[in-house]
Each structure stands twice: as C-alpha cells, then as structure tokens.
Length: 236
Image 1: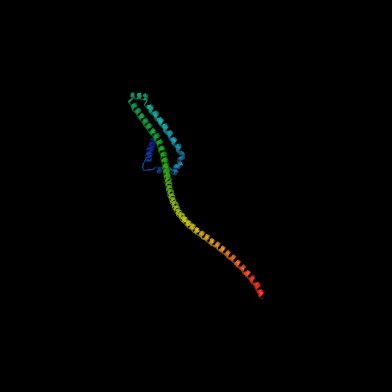
Image 2: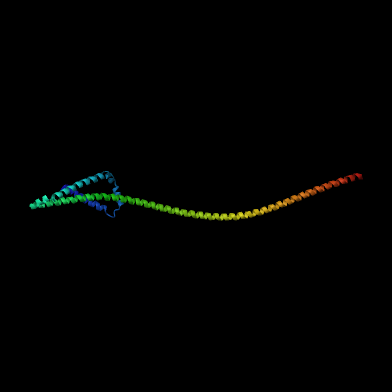
C-alpha cells in the first residue's frame, strides 16, 4: 500500500472511531455541545469549512483514481494478456484487488466524512433544541405558577368582594332600620311640634283674650274713677 492510501486508510479508521464515539448513547448532546464549544474548536471554526471541502475534494480525486484503476485492470485487454501469461494473470488480479480496495477505502472515507459532519451538526441542533425546550419548560412552569397565583388572587378578591358585599348589605339593612327608627322619631317629634304649636297658638289666643279683658277692666276702672271724682267734689 502506497503512502497516500495508507494515510487514507488511517483517516478511514479515525472516521470510524470518531463516529462510534459520537454515537455512544450515554453521552448526551449537551455534553457534546460543551465539547464543541471549547476554545480550540472556536479557534478552528473559521477553517473548518475549508478543511471539510478540501478533504472532500482530495477523497473524490482518490476515489476517481481508484475507479479508473478498477476499470483499467478489469477491462478486456489486461484480462486477455493475463490469460496468455499466468504470472501476468496473478499480477493483474493483484492490481485489480488493490484498486478495488482503494475504491472502497476512498468511498467509505467520503461517506463517513459527510456522515460525521452531519452527526456533529445534528448533535448541536439537538443540544440547542434541548436547551430551548428546557427554557420553554421553565417559562411554561412560571406561566402556570403565575396563572395559578392570579387565579388564587382572583378567588381571594372575589371572596373579599363577597364578604364586603355581605357586610355592606348588613350595614345597609342596619342603616335602613336606623333610618326607619329615625323617621318614626321625626314623625313623633313633628307631632309633638304640632301639639306645641297648637298649645302656643292657644296660649297666644288666651293671652290676647286676657289682654283684651285687662284693657276692658282698665277702661272700666278709669270710668269708675272718673265717676267718683265729681261726687267727691260735690261733697266738699
């Protein structure tokens, strides 16, 4: 195996190992996201796309070269020459085997390279989704707690309003009773005032009659005095 295909084979083994590690079930997507967020990956992130496409191009070139080698050694002309010379037959089959091996190595390397990138992308998306789901769950729980608290506050407020309404109703009833009692007292007072006014009018009329009687008596007294005065003069 030449140096380039040895490197491709080691690259394939590394891809298999990395993909197996990424698929380990007990390592969560959040842990992988924390690993991917390390400083070294942030430093390499600007070069990641360039490295990815460069490796894709190199592997595609090697894959096409392996396809060419397979077609070269599986064609009718090499097989015809191999049938003529038995030693050449083994050599052609060895070359064909190596070409097919290189084809599989490069093909699976391309496939696993794309799969590895896709797995890393999906792990990041799953981690972000889990974080968003956790935040959304917290927001939902807070919203439910706030709704329950508002419902309890509404119930408390309704109960307070109901108690206040009952208290106001009792006070209104008491005020109505008090107003009725005061109205009765006012009626009694008005009746007493009318009686007092009637008594005052009667006393006024009586006083007026007494005054008239007093004036009449006073006039009669003056008349009697006037009648007595001439008689006293005559006696003298």
